[in-house]
Image 1 (cartoon, rainbow, N blue to C red):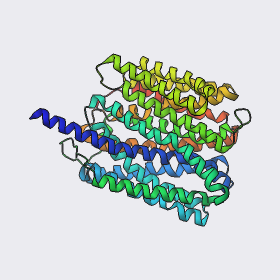
Image 2: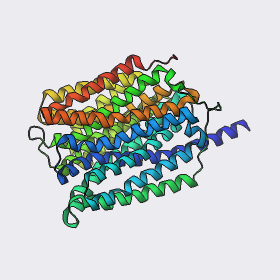
Image 3: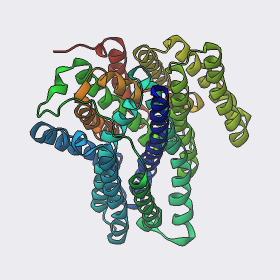
Image 4: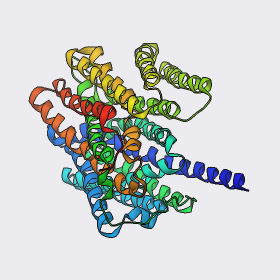
Length: 459
């Protein structure tokens, strides 16, 4: 009887994991479209790099403000997610996201840059609630020991969205709708109305799906108890620098690839290489899901770890030719080796990946042409497990404060608003190429967190 109950519980968790993972895909797809919007709106409204980066500022500032509101409510009234449940929290997040997406239509109609920023802000508020609910929900749908593996798997599908987002978004906005059909800001109308419908459809799917109500069984307290855990406090700063570095690189990449001393690519062509950057996160996260799992059959584990980069190499070869496949293959081998040296330990893997990202940024800063170009693109592979590993290390041992801790971590997605603006200012002052010294600072802190900052104790 006990075995049957355990099997039923596992099935429920698996079904719930599949449903929630679809959300990771969707918000990954939508978030990376900002990388396409930045150069597009820059051209439409004749913006400099700093003003164009306000796209990321508006979107990611919503994470900060939304999370601050959530945190204050959790102190005054008790944790909202613990009170209403993960399901209602996710549905609310989807409805707010749909509203933000729908606002792109009047923004394009009135041709107001500020209106676009407001629409992105509202969409960001919806994603804030989704992140607060979905990340810890995935982490607790099973044993704490394999939480990082589950979150890497879900984040892998998030990265699938960020991989195909630049390709589809670049085609629709730069070519299809900006071509013979419409002009100016109108090119974003139809895509974002479609996304509005998709958000509403997902909300309906979640509504009719059975998501198990997983709780700690502990009382809801009106307190900022999560702040007593240094691994969370240091982890919040790690999220700030991780998201800031990752988003900053992706946001300026099209401008970087357009430089004559790098690749001299047009925007539509450069957006394909942005997909390589975000695709690296997908490959690395699927590898991380295997490497950090509690799979007992080591032979099968290493075989699966070899299969992921091998499959990626073949796909790149088929769609982009042998030259691209061979160059990217070097990074795939390095990524696989880094996982092996990480020994399935989240903090050790994070440290190694941060150090490699620092090395690649320095190589890009000291070189031009293909070397600099591929060094920046290759960083995507080593960004892969950072979010999942930081998140699970940060909320480990928090118990009833997991959702409150999650809100603090999501609050620090603020890095995606602040760091790109600093890199934009550096690009205006010193040039796009030299501006990559900004994310170096981010990865230095991430190396510290993987070395010392992750250690769990209570103040």
